[in-house]
Image (cartoon, rainbow, N blue to C red; front, side, top):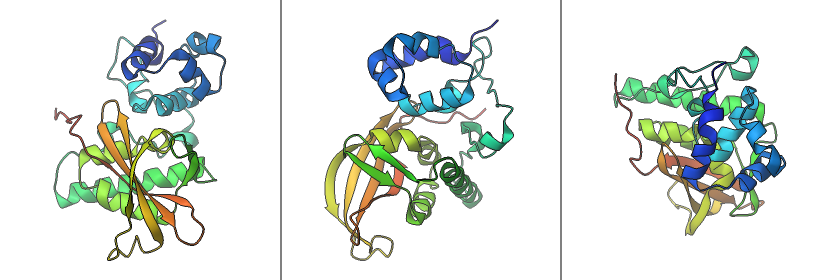
Length: 228
């Protein structure tokens, strides 16, 4: 039986991103000695979680090795009905392309909220939860939809929320309606394999000091979508 791409490429990707098997096991919540067994799994929820930990697109880890371009869709339609893959994202710069990307981002956040009812992730660098709120969806959909690469970056939301590192603090923009509720903004960055350098802005809310994901955009042309 052919191997899933995850089994064949998983260890290679770990080496490429500089993550040890021990660290990978810790983030996956398993024992170090079980990592090799994990790579043989055919459970798509597990592979999806591994993609988040590695910071790579889910579509990179699924499919069989003899058909690397094939994406396998799980039978559980309810779990993946809103799953977005790279080929769903328009690559052009027309207003129609941007509207479609905006709709995809908003649908992605809606599904993310369904999967994550607490609407937050713990960030290692800040040692604080980063929360998702309506402003996260509105601002990210507006800004990330401007380019293909930024829209692709949003699909790595879990990995970004968890692994982005703080770069600096800046004042909130006095003239921005969406930033009015924040006392200051935290600029964070994350390097995503296949996408490049990603910028995440996190706002610190005045009323309760809650860290809220404000916007996500790609800031490196690390990957150019090739048209067929």
